[in-house]
Image 1 (cartoon, one colour):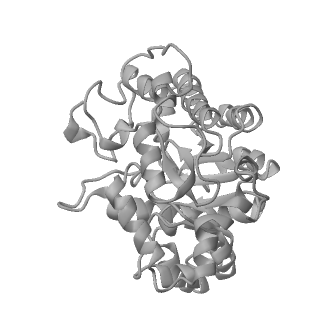
Image 2 (tube, rainbow, N blue to C red; image 1 turned 30 degrees about the vertical axis):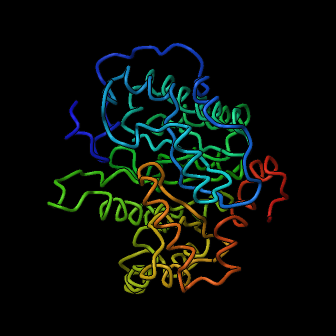
Image 3 (cartoon, rainbow, N blue to C red; image 1 turned 60 degrees about the vertical axis):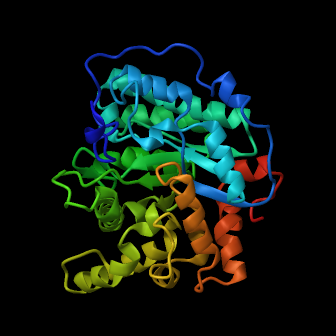
Length: 363
């Protein structure tokens, strides 16, 4: 696999032949753990769109042909040292780490069992090493719903995950597909937080020259998933699941009026369901937030459900600083709203992290 094939669409998408077992523990390496002091600020931003690739996870991906041994995408070169440095530079108190592995990487059941365990235990190790700097979203194998339900239980009950990450699609099925109802029933029973992440449009296709898929296709993918959750009735059937939409909901806030119009014509989801969903979803600022997008997001969403997000390390350190500064100076946000987005909303949503930070949920 060469660098040309390692775009965001193609990296970590198909397994190599056979499963090669990884060895060693699932926490961050001793070198990583020693690279920065434990602890850190007890006040500051909470980054809910924050990716991590600890050593054990990367070794598993390399051993199974999902990443090359050398080179590869910049986000796969994650280190704890650079992460903590970027967090300090942007006054990020804690990041909710996640690994948006495309569902197809876990199509094989044996690989799903091993790979999900490696991903989740490596992220749990990161939290254990730096409990007031990180939380994590657990991966599950959505090609195998029965297995995914077991993985949810292990991640939340044993590993102490703060929530679950679900990719927008599994094959050609979006999350509103009836096949996922048993998984949503379990998540609803647990009042779980679900962080949704796009991976490109399910039918694939050729990228527009000069326009990488993450600029437009990822946002459309999130929008389609959100509308599918609404139209299928999944949101109404499972009211106790808290769902975060990546990248400020894609195009959903901007296109919601069009969805309502279609519904009034009998050609789209129920307009009332669209309006309920807009206020129910959570949204991160990793679009990123901008003077173009923020007014629409504030008009569509409940400000108590907007969360700070950077997309680190897919977004490099200098760009994290740029978009964070843009958020801090966005004329659409007053001081109180900015504080809620940066920290307070996340404290309410993630009580385990709030406890580790010595905070009561709500800030």
